[in-house]
Image 1 (cartoon, rainbow, N blue to C red):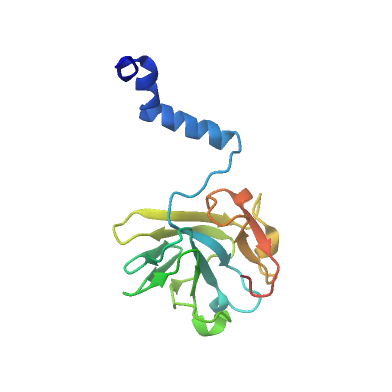
Image 2: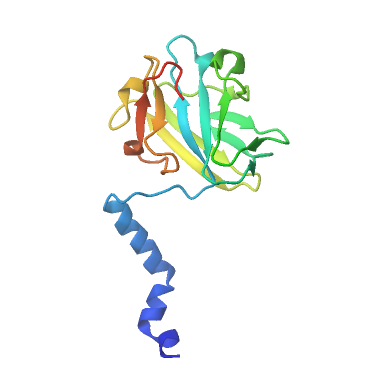
Amino acid sequence: PFFQHSTFARLMTSRTFLRHALVFLWGAGASVFADSVVTFNELHYNPPTTQDGEWIELHNQMTVNIDLSGWRLDDGVGFTFPSGTVIPGGGFLVIAKNPSLSGISGALGPYSGNLSNSGETVELISRSGRVMDRVSYGDSGEWPLAADGVGATLAKRSPGSDSERATRWTSNSLPGGT
């Protein structure tokens, strides 16, 4: 009974405390993981030959299959996942500007628009309208420069980590990525 009414109990259940704790951890450079079951994992935003070779790879952080029917990519590009689209537990899914030019078997697409070569924001939005993940990449500052037109892709250092910070990304020098 004492604990339920104590200052400590009120503090521990306070949204303000949680918010301050998260800000402290973020500022201290702690590993922050994306608050989503599916996240961006790799982007081929500036292929060496043609923009039609662009693609976006998603990663399912869960061990169960996730139905992406009605989810969409928004902002920089536009794509709505057709009914019956499932990403397997722990699996990956590629959405391409032009699937036949992506070089990736099973790629979905096409999506409308282009990934900007100089950087932009792309969002993954659930069928209920919730932003599940967001990446605002660039080609300067802390963003890996090798991903900017020489064949490398922009890839997560650790799948499932947050997508917002440039330090969470690296370049993947494998031809065509993944």
